[in-house]
Length: 206
Image (cartoon, rainbow, N blue to C red; front, side):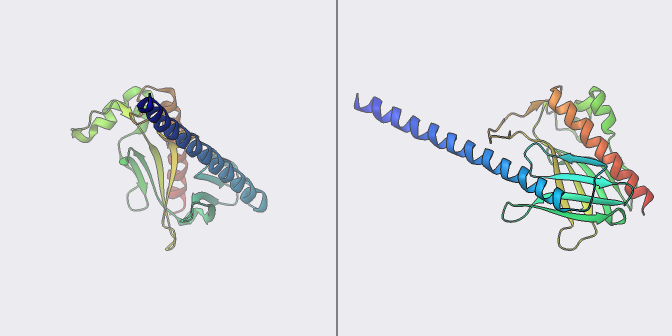
């Protein structure tokens, strides 16, 4: 009986710990959301296009008329910050699936990599498999990010998340999402849209 109580106690400790961690993640998510709203309300930049990640840790906005782009990111203290750049400061845009590049546009080479359009059409496996020949045969995807390089010595690179295997309450999907999952398809659609926007910016402001 004593052993049973010990086991129950250990399980309870783990459960309570997980619940507290989830509460902390939710609290941080809310704080990030409020910080983003505060930055927006205090700024003179009125975005014509905007994207904020589900976890409120990153985001991107542009104003075509003023030719300005604002990027939201976490600083070293895990606090939300933003930086605003002119279109001419954008150097490179790159789509990464599970940290592997599938498409890149830069000032030096206008277009590099596999077409993500074929991914959206249902060819995710072909693109993932093509990243390193036939060695990668992933049926699942954990992360989709848009990496943006800018002309800024202090913060030259930003990573904007479009799909994460860790949800808003901090629960990790260790296997990832099946490549046919609707969340993967939505993320691919959105990340390619923003990559295309940045591609136009780079092309027209070189």
